[in-house]
Image 1 (cartoon, rainbow, N blue to C red):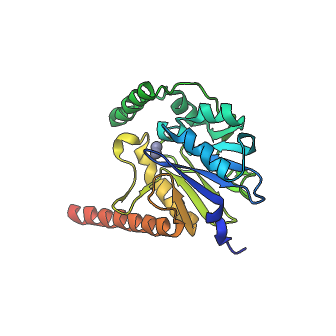
Image 2 (cartoon, rainbow, N blue to C red):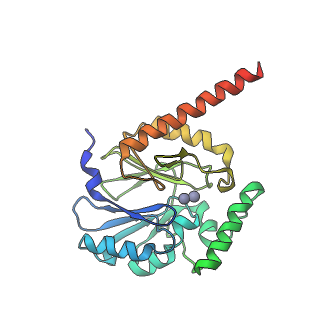
Image 3 (spheres, protein in one colour):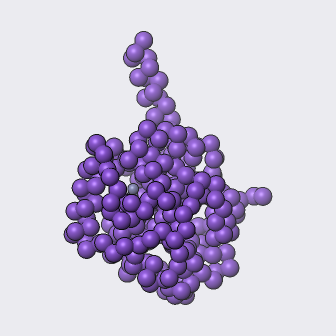
Length: 246
Ligand SMILES: [Zn+2]
Ligand SMILES: [Zn+2]
């Protein structure tokens, strides 16, 4: 089946202070799915984006979390209370949502930043993951979304792939800006040894369009090309390191 290239018309970017969250509008136009919930200020933008679609909170069918970091799950308790929609996320993300993840090593800085952020922003309302997801799960939203487990940034970090539109929502696998395309810095990654495998898994999936949760413009083809450049750069560095050893 040829990919439906009109997917962009059914994605609303909600831009926050750090990253973005998305509203994925259902094919029938009746209802939407919230992909991540953002940080400070986003509830107002989420409300406005939904209203512009002519939709209300009860039209939100699900809240999908790529992972539980504060800039993605900061408003998940609010979103749950406002929409009454079920929260979908990998089970390993509950500790991040709760703010109790035992960060280790250099990653402890991530925990410190999150604790400071929680205190500053007054985030802290509990939110329970209603539906735990795992690699390969097919979710009945947006014409079908497949869960793609991409661990490394966090243990339960997941992307969502739409075969219908051939687009991968890649979470924080990498950030894509004009001035910088990069994988998250070491202090933000709980299991960095798993990142190469997840990069390879995303590459092998071969999606025509990629949409991360930190980017400049909503252009899935551009982000896919930048992702390929990022992989080529990493491969080149590996070769150079190996050559330096001999
Ligand atoms: Zn993150
Ligand atoms: Zn992030």
